[in-house]
Image 1: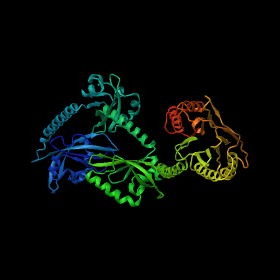
Image 2: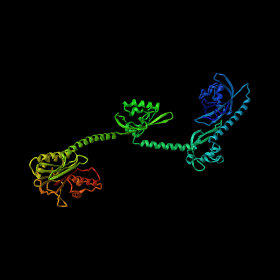
Image 3: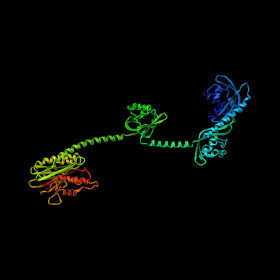
Image 4: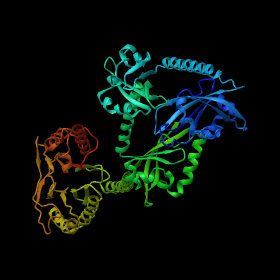
Length: 634
């Protein structure tokens, strides 16, 4: 753009053509027209822009205008839109130097009337005065705006500087005038910008890096025009610098922020998709490429629903977007929700989506963070399956526990000759402990305690099988050792296949003779506390655990019980119960508790031992089954 377009009130036209020194100057074109000139000719300004000068110049050879520029003025006629010819005096002023072999000329129009051409000189002086006044007003306005106006001689030395240089660079006008323009630039700019002065071409929006008088960097946006006379001689440079230091810092900070944001987007483990209000994808990060199979080049510019939304959901998506754009309402925005997405190959997979709208002016952009939850869904399905299986197992365990409890003695036995009581506290699951006492006939009491390895339905089933076999065998004649032998051979095949084993202690009490006979299959020995003694003794006999091998011979022993004698029969869960510190309750504590409460009934002794056990372990339930029986000779 050239200077002083519509500033003055007189008629003025700006044209552009090939250089005046060209062998064949190109046809001049009208570039700018002020309102007075357009009104004079009967056109609007727009109708004349980029039209050849011959459209309004009556002689038809506008190229001669530029050939005669050295005369600075010429008389001629202009043609109005209606075809009327107006005699005029045309005054020429060069506006800028060659730019791409083009030259700009301002043509000032003085209407001639009654042949009074002599008035043109006075009118020209008025025009020049008006131009000077207009330029001074422009300078004042630029000063008020804080822009630095300057002029340089053809070699680049300042010959004029406005006062704004003090505000921008910290230097006074006197500090600048007479100095070369590169003296105030940074070292790099001195090298990079030298060619602008040598090129004699205008420059626009050039970023200069100055050093302020106090040393801090200053950034300006500079525009400069070469002033060239009619003969093509460079007279001077005229330009303006605008301080953009704050703007530059803000832009740099914004660029850095955008870089950080881009880094976050690019390195995110989630797919990040950004689209405009029309549903067109504008950003597609690398994770989106991996997740959906579309490259960024393919995705950007495409419609979101056509790439990642299964066909059956697309209408709902479009209706939801349309509803939000009209009402601003969408219940799914700004929260996490689960949906189904589609890959490039058409396969579907579950995703977790967080979508948010951002209003920019009168429109919206939408960002979505998408996380593939296929693995999580599979894990959740496994968890649900496990929960169902656990619920079924727990139900089965409760049923088995009820069965197990129903197979144990329902109440203590108290007669004129003895008392006996027992209890079984199963672990959290179904246990393999078992105890029983029953009359084999009117004069014989059988007592048995057993522990099947493991804690599940399997041990419980073996316990049921062992009880059935024991009760069946008890109906026949046989000693304690014989019963263990028969039981071992009966259970061997089942135990061997299932990789289980059973420890068992069998006792038979003859009420008439007060004889106690017993045999052991690898079970912890019961404790005998004589009424006449203060210490317990262990009852033991040789014998392997059941299920190791067939045809085992079990040792059998016997002794006589006196009035007041006590027996404590237990499983290893009692002695191996642990305190919070990991210490076993142990046989010593069992024996001491047994002795302390020996004067009480079997039921009381059982309850007292369990209470001391709970206090020691500081808990109400145990990792292993706890089973014990107490027999007392009356």
